[in-house]
Length: 86
Image (cartoon, rainbow, N blue to C red; front, side, top):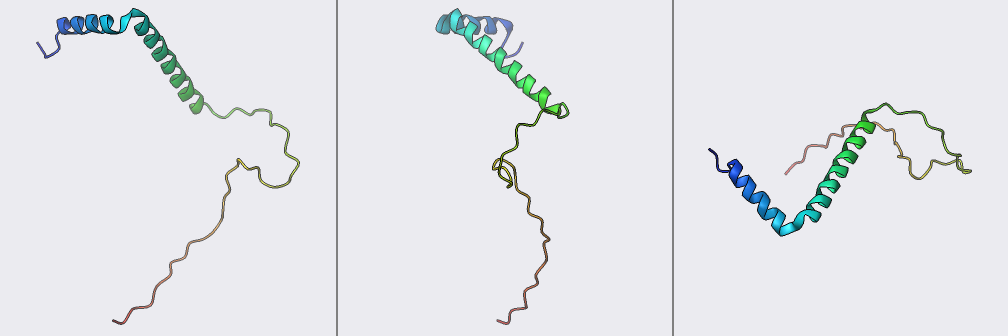
C-alpha cells in the first residue's frame, strides 16, 4: 500500500468533479486531446523529408529576400599578442 491507494484517487476524482463540474472537465479533456494531436502531427511533419512545393512567384528585385538567412564566409586566424613587460 502506497501513499496514494486507489481509494485515495477515487476521493480526489470526486472532489475535482465537485469543484470544477463535468462540463469544464469535458472541455479540458477535449482541449488536451487536440493539443496532443497537434503536437504529434507537428512532430511527424518535421521528420518527413521536405516535399518539393511549387515556388511562389519570385520578387522583382534581384537582392536576397528579407526572410532568408545570410551567410558570411570567412576564416578565423589566431593573433598572438606580444609579451607584456611589467
